[in-house]
Image (cartoon, rainbow, N blue to C red; front, side, top):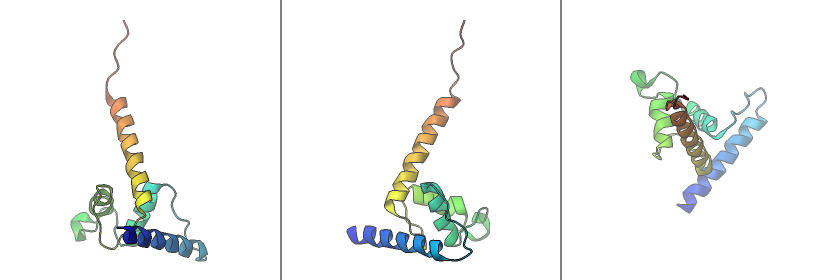
Length: 106
């Protein structure tokens, strides 16, 4: 497991450096979830492509990754994955709290 974590970390660093050095390259997306989305896009996953070729950005890549499953061709730093999972959990809690009706004041 340690070798996997180290390999994933090194690949993440190399990927980041290659984007930083490429002239005219689009800047990398910020935030842990956006970094995962970018890794999915680089592996050929696209929004709305689930029914066409099974390479939908969210259904076939983001959702399985956030559920702890591996996705072929997508490598993400475990710390980034964990940070995104925590961010989404907080968002869901906040969303659930906002959707409960508040008691009316009499």
